[in-house]
Image (cartoon, rainbow, N blue to C red; front, side):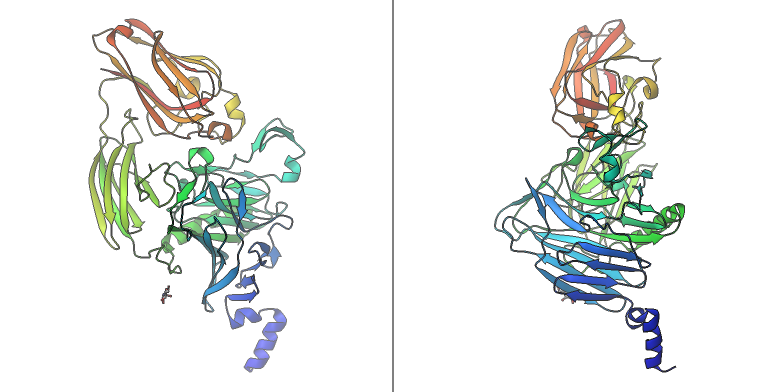
Length: 555
Ligand SMILES: *[C@@H]1O[C@H](CO)[C@@H](O)[C@H](O)[C@H]1NC(C)=O
């Protein structure tokens, strides 16, 4: 068969583009069509999608905007490209981006897509640059992908798998509060049911009826917030969101100085096919493949260095600790928004190491994930060089001595109490009692103490003690404080704490374990202690709190 006949046969079978080039990009004005042998994406001129074809079947939403980048800055804004640029175009890889620029008070944004031969999906990242002469701000910014909710009816954020429902269905149900509906069987669904901890989420996606679509994130280095940053991941109507920055669950937006630039991503938008269980096991395998490829060599940008370094060290004093590195050094790690953040738990011997860190200067912090030193934070700093391993030495988190009793251990999460480990849902904030009495020695933390004190009232702790000439130190570590709670703590009717908090928006957004962490260290003198039964009360007159741990120390 000569070449001409061979090609004619292929064209008649519809395989011409595969034979001529494995990845093809067709640009027309600002429209783009990109495909390989597995998937085809057809983009409109505004960079949103008109079709995502997997094995020839369109799985994109047919009624709603999809594949959009937007932000909130005291009002919604949406990415408006003015030009399209091809970075690389070979038969095995095509890389292009849309550019938005020259809009007053708005970042210059490049929205990149990279398709690779043989990969069933498309890589993406966004580069933001403040090319204005003064600060630019953002409350939140994200990318959103919507698929066909009558095909991809299910969702998984790795921590949780289930039905996502359609808006059409939810709008017929009883609305309880914004984004919260009561279903016919009496249970609730909220938009926040499938929120999760970003840095514990490798994949988030929607699937069903033979098709799956997932955002796979081999690294979360680029997001705002710390190890416990939570955000929306997937929700009703077959939607996947990748939030770069947000104020959900107690973090702040960003204020970027002139000249600042940042790459959000890359991530892989991955498509697969098969039974539900085959789709979910395949995505786990794909995560492992993507992690091996990080950092992605297809990015050629000084804001995404390919040569990286490592940091190692040891934490002493605790059987488990969290270690955090961040380079937005004007902020705490929980509130960092301009830079990059890495975190890891220590090994059983206290050692830790983190690889693939961008070269630069970092602050280092370690906090305990065990014991009673809830106010402990060890800090240091380190410089990471390309190809180098920096050792930060030993970070010390000494365990407080003379602990008389505790309710739980510290880890900045309310994870040992009643309902703590339930899947996120609106119902749980309605269940804890207004008042309870917890007796040290006989009550159970998993049955008699609750994940949140969600209603105005008084929670009482009773315990035996003896006046011994020493004062007492009461550590009250709060894992969350929502709707501006006012907490008053009394020991035997002596007020020993009176604290006002802000609103981390966590408890009423179905967070089950954390929002903004605060550690209170309260003291009582010897005269306030009684020999016999002592009564400690935690009174909230408004708002909601979660307790990480409470402990009483002699002295
Ligand atoms: C990376 O981009 C620079 C221009 O910004 C170019 O000079 C260089 O050749 C590129 N490197 C590769 C490997 O494409």
